[in-house]
Amino acid sequence: MIKQTKLDNGLTLEMFDLSRQVAGGRWLVSFEARIEVRVKPEYFVDDSYTRIDLEGIQALLGEIVTYRYKKERNFIAESEKDTIFKVLKERFLDTTLCYLSSPNFPRRLILRRYQEALSQQRQSFPDARCGKLKYYH
Image 1 (tube, one colour):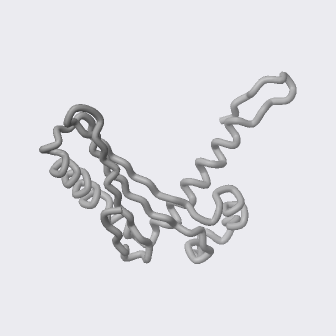
Image 2 (cartoon, helix red, strand yellow):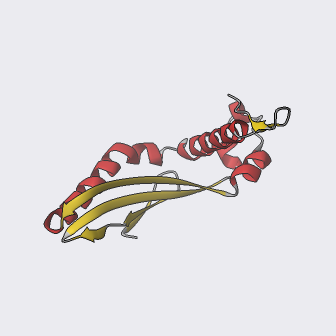
Image 3 (cartoon, one colour):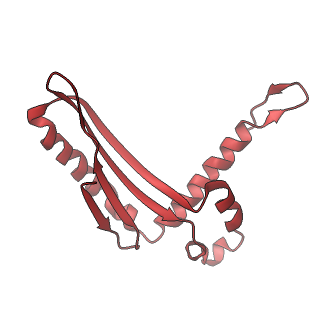
């Protein structure tokens, strides 16, 4: 980990340099950012979320949902790798830090992952009548 930042919404942003040499002085420059969001009831206290099934969300997603952002550039000269990494990191911070710091970010992330998981479950539900998989939309 290269840096850990406490966000305005109380979450912690962790940034990683996962770069590695690939061949003959060339590098895969890899930046990754992560935020672990604990699934908590206080994210859903707003009146519009009174029907949220928090136990169902936790049963499907677990206690923690992880936000991940990864950006890579391949076949970078060793002399340029630090500059490229810095650009990837700064571009990420410039474009997403405000969104990630929002008080609504944890709730939005949890609900988006929950919807994705439900959709994935529906798509792979087997249709027993014909013995084949049927995909529901």
